[in-house]
Amino acid sequence: MMWLTAAVIALLTAAAVVLLWWPATAGLNGDKLVSTRLDALKIGLSIGLGSGGVVALYLSWRRQDSTERTLAHQQDVHTATMAHQDRVAKAAEHDAAERRLSELYLKAVEQLGSPQAAVRHGGLYALERVAQDNPPQRQTVVNVICAYLRNPYTPPRETSEPRPLGIRRPLLRSTTIPRTPTPQPDAQARDSRLQEREVRLTAQGILQRHLYPGEDPASPQPTFWRDIDIDLTGATLIDFMLPGAQLRRARFDGATFTGYAGFGGATFTGDAGFDGATFSEAAWFDGTTFTGHAVFDGATFTRHAVFDGATFTTHAGFVGATFIGYTGFGGATQGELAFDPTADDASPRDEASPDPGEGAL
Image 1 (cartoon, rainbow, N blue to C red):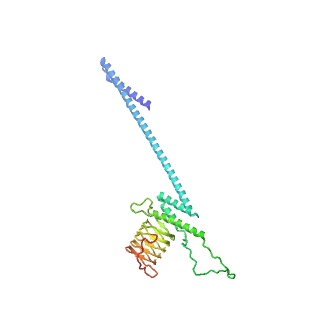
Image 2: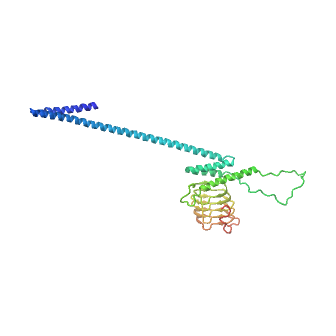
Image 3: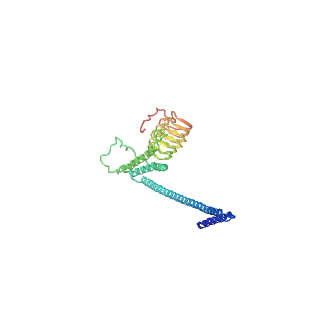
């Protein structure tokens, strides 16, 4: 292309000189002829130089454009390479974090199956840490804790039955009546139940800590786990307390509340089911808000059942519920109500309201 361009410029220059040299000087002689031919030569050379300059400028522009395109391409390649490396690094970091999370989660779940209570405690605290540091895993961790609490459990007897007074033991061993050894209580089994009781209280404490938004629900504390469902169907719960808690759906169908049950000031944004639940001590639902359905059909309240100031937004069912102690619905706000309770005297007791600070509350 360079040689071709040079040839074209030379041809144009020669053509211009010839045209100006011969036709333009026809009929001239002397000084005018010489002067005119010199002018023709200058014009031809100027045309050649000008054409060469234009070509040089064009080539310079092409070189600059090519350089800029090369630099831009290199910059694009560098940017794409850095973006790819960044994606690879983030993917590797995410995979490593997910791997650590999975290992910690699996190890914690394995610890819950340990025969040693201390190891089960550690598993619960490890799960709590997993949920606190990884919000998407909070519902999964709560499901595991609830599944642990749903395992069959019989609380140990607080005190052993005393031997009846006034019964004398024989001084001499009878030779005719065979003596059967009195079975001794299994101290090891009792200790195991006591240890399991502490593990369950730890599991309940984790739920209590993280379902409570704090004094100002509009600005919940960092430990609050939002929009959590719990399923404690058939669980044995010991002094189960969720005062002021906020949760979505809750199922306590057939659960046994050993000791006090405290839900005062709690908020259920979804349905709350207590079908067939048994409350062995006072049950506190004062100021509780049930946004969804609240179902207590067939529940048994052995002692006080306090619903003072509770809010039932949609439906509240107490069909077949048994109220043995004090029953209070003072100031309760209710929507559709299905209330057909039974009691030992076919009506709720007419007693003074119990002290809200009684017992564990």
